[in-house]
Image 1 (cartoon, rainbow, N blue to C red):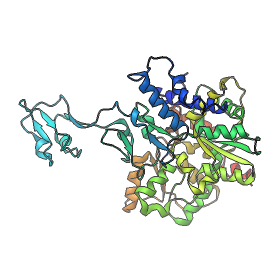
Image 2: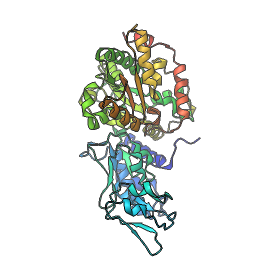
Image 3: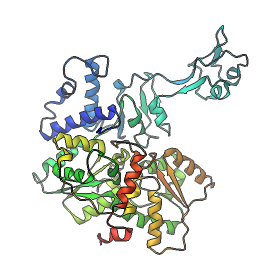
Image 4: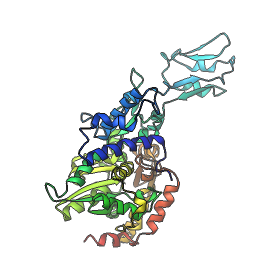
Length: 474
């Protein structure tokens, strides 16, 4: 069974697993220049025009797998040398143009960018075109189309543009680190920084210089991943890597649902704090609504805080589908609780760097959270959990009017309406990825089936209420 959706993901995995393997063996820095040759042996390129360019790109991938550019605060980085195969894009006239006499496209263009040849076929002068799209709207044959690059199409908040060399650049003042561009780039020219070496060092050096326990906090969306194995085998694999204990982030979600419902009744209007990309989007694009962001930490940080308060020798690694969690972990209020963040892609690479075949392992148990904590992984799950928390706390005089936003475009619409007092909602659940966390860029697989897997996983929870789940923490 395939472990990844795309070959680009498989390429990332190959780089990550080799970097991790060398790190385990204490040979990473000695063999650093040889890794591209290990991955592409011989003189025959597998994807590029020549083996030398392919290896040069792999060298850049290795750098990002080792933490990337330390001067760039963004966890998403562009590999310029790999960003060279996409067409420039923009508005273009297709062969559907019939050379009509109306010339509506010319009339509507305010910049004089439309001209015609001897056959009356339209042409667009790229040096004059402002990409307004007016010509495309009026063409009766829909012969003018916008050909944006995949990364630009993926980035719904318009944080990506092209420089003079036609390479993608990311505006860090706009970017929310959601990773949509990472998943959609057909050449893998945009990657999320990896901290897999930090995790290897943590696991390798425990009890060497100082004694500490490394906890793996896994996102509930793990239930829809590693489809070639059983969840219990994944948990056994984590312990085989050296993790002391595996804890559900969903238990943190139970804690957040209870606290967030209380905060909602006290303040009257709230936006959720669980999705770091959504929170970042409010801070950067809707600063007037910042005061309404829930003051609760995310489920990841909430459960990590609990772990560190109960175990002074704890180090916590979060494992999930989200690239934005890597950015969240760098924030001062979160950094003290989270020691590293990995995606599911990176976890697969870590397993294989140690030659751990999880399908051959016995099943372990993962059962710390309720149904409601586990369904945080999908869009609408947080709203359901807040409604349940209100019910369990006996808060009957508060009417929950929730707006569930599935994807950053839906978030934008809801926030825009609320900023103009046009939205009758007192709670906005924002999920930057379509589908929720199950659509995260760091997932092994993406798709509608993932929602069903999350609901199934929720129904398997031993604790059926939020109150029962968090009672074990007292």
